[in-house]
Image (cartoon, rainbow, N blue to C red):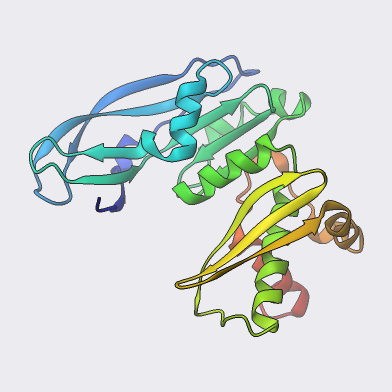
Length: 237
């Protein structure tokens, strides 16, 4: 199956107001033009997904199936990213999937969520979105996960296992019994790192202000973010 990652046009972007959560999953039908045959067809997109009440929809988000389309004309299959608010009341987090910052109207309704201990994050890509769900469901800090991925990247390259250019992905796998598993992948090989959470906690405790995150603005916590922290610390930003 061919996978083409594309996005819906700007005018299809949405705004969802959250007032203490308890928002139902909601979808709508929009017109979309196939990137292959250029013919239009109707597609269902989700404005909001409430994982706690729709576990099947949660699974489709993690697998990416909720973003997978099939053109009824040319039969090509591809992925389409569109703005979506993902709510998990059991694990207390809300994700805003979009290449753009959360709209002002969404930011203005987040105070009740932060007061109730919710983690609020923006995900700029489908990969970040799927991985973020797994991280936060595991009950670990995504700041800690990004630090673990960065440390694994450095160790992989410093030990001569591959160059930065050869690395195709650095992925969070899972956290069990206080151990976080990170996998660094190249085209023809890969290596997994098992990192104790206590080690990551100690690393963050050495400079807690560096890793401090403003939770109320749907911050983007990803590989670019963690790299920017060290560039700023080194004065190379």
